[in-house]
Length: 172
Image (cartoon, rainbow, N blue to C red; front, side, top):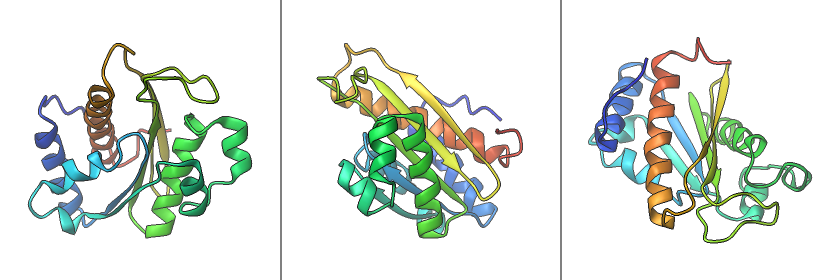
């Protein structure tokens, strides 16, 4: 189901309502957004019934130490990759025993990273016990860091909504 709302707080409210009504929980592993996604979700009254925790794994070492993503995976695939986002989502879900785990990593600029990942490149993934799905976004590099982060939060909210509102049935 697609959420056509343009206000991130309205989408966040829909997510919290759906999770709460289904007695489900969500946890987050944020890198590029630095906690902004969790902040948006927890602006909603009653969100503590659905949001378990968010970990900001901004550095490579925190992705390894906090989430257990092998350094060899990060070296092979890059810290900003589909593989890393999927690992973040799966590992945070398992670590925090949530219904859903969400991971997001990307490059907000102003420079490229060690794997030459484009500024504005963002990978996100969501994981449930039975399914997972990931997406890649490439926001224009002319945006500021904050604009890229805000667009990432908005895209993340819509992606989370689509996945959980479909009950993960239609996701790969």
